[in-house]
Length: 157
Image (cartoon, rainbow, N blue to C red; front, side):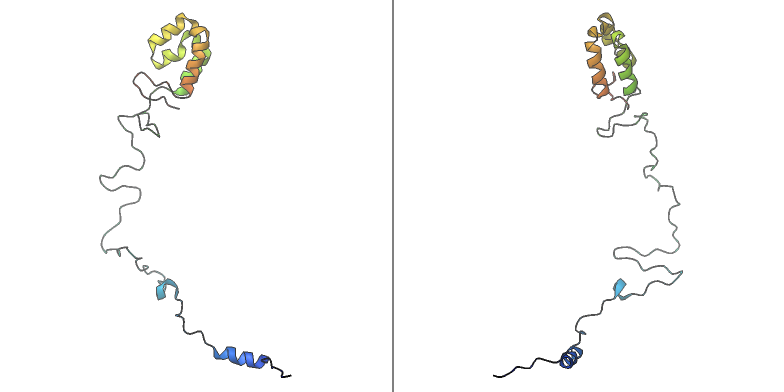
């Protein structure tokens, strides 16, 4: 029988040392550019304009002329803020105060007096808050935000 000879370790090392990997381009970080030295400006990135000499950036904390104020300047049409979802101006009345008044003094219509619904408050006063049922339902409606003020503005939280 004929024996086949296996390659020896020396043969494998000789073959592997003759193979070169210089066919691939060398990787150069930062596009092959040298990093800026201390005190030098870095080169502009793609799509950016280099800084112009003699022009000063706007001072810190001051918006450009005509830009909206970043600090939320008061809106004269909504002195108590705006609803975060609908954008409606908020009422000067608070939901918590109206709800607690209606919960504890609903038989007298106190929550409705506070909100400015005088006709409903008189009806609750004459019926003792609908024997308590009307006052309780009204309290729940106030707390979940279904009762606006007389001008139609949502109550503040």
